[in-house]
Length: 339
Ligand code: NAD
Ligand code: DAU
Image (cartoon, rainbow, N blue to C red; front, side):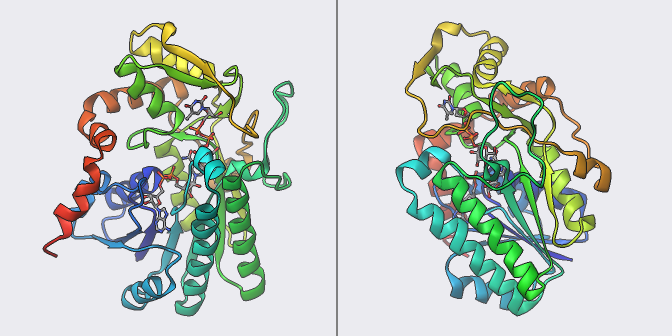
């Protein structure tokens, strides 16, 4: 079995590459990644030494490069993680989000049609459902919740989901979609809340909380996301959407205070800053379909996962200091200049 994983040099894609290489020793795993600011080959250091792994530096919206790779590799399964993923960046500069998240997905769908695949899987997000009110704890996103986006990021991801569904219905493309809640864990780029707060706390820098810190996110340890996608690509029903989440809702302030407590740092580091424009209030996933159809349950609670994550950042300082200094960008040059 040959599996193409796009965006595999990023946070979740990188964890998924490592997960698949470890679990399926008989599979060939191929990563396509453009190595944007968020892509980091240091995340794939072990994978790059594995004979079952191959890496292509390519942009999913570059049709000819992607067609050439498929012509050469003829994969069985494609899992698309590649995306511009940061909401704040999408508010500053939406265009790239449409190019990568929407047009890039279209290129992948076209190439999958041309070469034929057993499964195309689109890694989507719970943000396509918009948000839930803070005072209605009884409400959750189900797969039937209407699409109702807030940011250019979520609009671009929703557009991609609709395209995937259109390609399934119109052309019979064997596709599935998963919509996951907020992930955290190893290799998370330090622009997102949890890694940024860990790194800032370690440097005794201010921890900038947007608004009052009351917004709620539903946190899932990244390995649990990987195991859910594994089940969907092997056993999920074609044409279906699956919501992934583990009922780990926390306000942003609770998350930040937990990190400070674990690191033995003062809450005086917390600084309240201007709120994010259009800031979604609450995300909360109903994962019943994943439980009932695929027998998936998350293994890691938030209390356990946040400790594991903080320890990972403490033990892997070089990974994130290279990002902060910009040194990680030299890695590709070093690894590939003579290949
Ligand atoms: P990330 O930003 O850490 O990684 C994205 C990866 O995609 C990077 O390696 C980057 O180089 C690559 N990439 C970007 N543009 C590309 C292009 N045009 N061609 C090829 N590669 C490109 O993102 P992440 O947090 O790992 O998210 C991965 C996927 O999961 C995204 O599709 C995101 O929408 C989705 N998702 C993320 C979360 C989360 O909490 N992080 C939750 C649910 C869904
Ligand atoms: O729900 C899934 C989504 O989760 C994914 O689709 C996105 O790719 C991913 O980035 C994430 O989006 P969020 O906007 O929820 O994540 P972020 O880490 O940027 O922010 C989490 C919350 O913390 C959010 O309410 C904004 C707030 N925040 C964020 C940062 C970076 C702060 O208060 N301060 C900060 O400095």
